Image 1 (cartoon, rainbow, N blue to C red):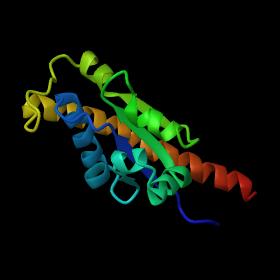
Image 2 (cartoon, rainbow, N blue to C red):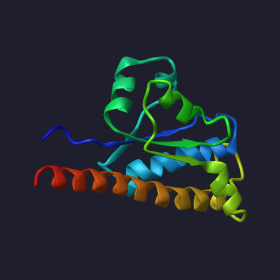
Image 3 (cartoon, rainbow, N blue to C red):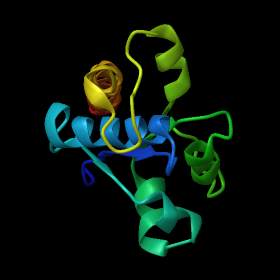
Length: 144
């Protein structure tokens, strides 16, 4: 059996935009608390600039992208290297579905922004579990 795959969560940069902050904070909540040891992140700028180690990590693992806007920078940069994200989320869709959970600032997103982060992170953590469980199920089928 090969090395265990992890899930790489890649947020948009979204610098200067509250939704970008929500994207990054969602990633941190997921990898540091909800899916610790199962998920990690990479720097989108390293992927954009063609860093070989980052590209390899993205290609060799499951990937979830978190994009703040319709430009879908995280998803498009993953696809640029021939990898289709296993899951892709649009942060604005979560914000639209939860109008009472709006981020209030660029750095300090406020209590309502934190609630939005937690809502999205719960979904992303479930995606992490689903991807890892599907892998385990596939391995069981291949071993029988």
